[in-house]
Length: 354
Image 1 (cartoon, one colour):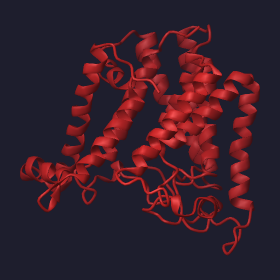
Image 2 (cartoon, helix red, strand yellow; image 1 turned 180 degrees about the horizontal axis):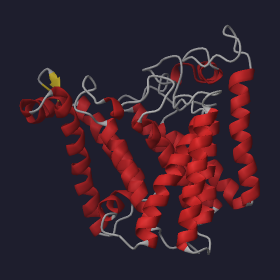
Image 3 (cartoon, helix red, strand yellow; image 1 turned 90 degrees about the vertical axis):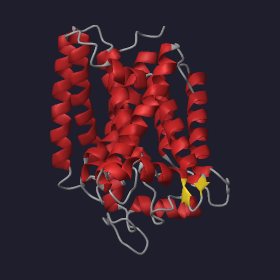
């Protein structure tokens, strides 16, 4: 029997997807504020927490929705296929199409975490989570990479990058060429991120008083953030590698944000602040897919010698702001346009499900 929806979780999901759309769609990549870009390699920026937040939320939602095996398999397959659609447009060159991607990682992490939830108890899930994080740490630092040795955590010489090149060949991220940020081995700790969400969802749906639940979320979040940061001394925090320290640190931060949302809505009953984010949160995956698709289409349509994206940016935003502020204004406007579209769906009671 499905559990009641947590408005706090919908708000957290909506806040996260709004941030994802914002950072993915600047007016120009040549002018972006530093917090709205990823760390060059090791390190953490606000942008680097968005994807793990989303995977964490995917995990939290699993115990609350209580899916069946059939639904899990179907949903994972659809999400993975939608990711391939985004990667393949407009030509679908199957010889070079990128196989990994954001939606593909979501699909795999959801599949593994949901099946574990349906077939094991919380202790097994906690043990698997720890094993994935510790095993990944050991593999990345102890397994020698041909031509690079062991313990190399650079973009080209690390084990995850070598495995992506060896297995996927031309089907990896073209922007980097030597590694894929959503590659094969780095999906292992991303599954752990999702499982940490599953354990959180179990806690959130328990019969404990809301204040106790909030306190537990906040305490676990603080411990996770400290542990992840400390682990980063030996295994640097790195989004592209999804290092174990990064997984624990970002899960801790996600717990703190979720605790704040839960306290505000479920404990204090403050619901108005959440309304704009709930509009986005109930159709988050659809919003990501559609906003990414339309953004891509805007770069394919040409008006004279420039793309439609560039035309809109230069005609509407550049004349009245500095390049970096015009770029941010374009991204913010893009989020608002999609908020309007999602509000229409929300008012009509439409929930787009995979």
